Image (cartoon, rainbow, N blue to C red):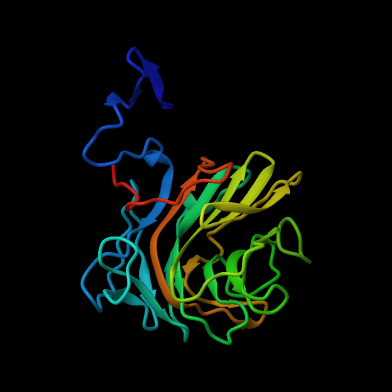
Length: 253
């Protein structure tokens, strides 16, 4: 149900009046959230909780775990050592087809000689129909965020940031599809926009959604660093212009 304006300029959704002055923020599009990983928990825990409306089982591989050494929000995040680590989950909720979507979250990159450290990927290989990946590129686009989706193009990324990423600090990313436009944003600035005429079949269920690791194009794609407050929203393009990155954790209501 879309928000409805009622007298007094209040918003009504799912029977709740949203005044904008609530103690806790409210996500009016929460019902569209397919995955929400706050990365909270006890230091060293391998229990990764999905706080979306339809919680998925999320499995930690390698040494991926909760760490209190760094966090954007909540006092903890998910840490990856860049050597075989990832967290994975499988669900048809990640089959986007031609829907709008938003992939977003925070990363703290420690730097490495790995060619394609992946933040989010759906395929452990490379140029495969349905494959998609958001990674940091150290080959063709040094120290840039790069997003690929191979149902659209097998030869070039859909989007590459213009800004060189900053190591050892928290950075926000967002990949957004809105109709025939796909945008890639870094710290709230949309730095790449592509007009999409083809139907993109992202199929993030091939074989599973991987966060923080894997292989790409035959090269090691393990990510060394921390990831926090990752959210995937299906059917909603949350950002279509430059924006201020979130200043609080994504809401659970």
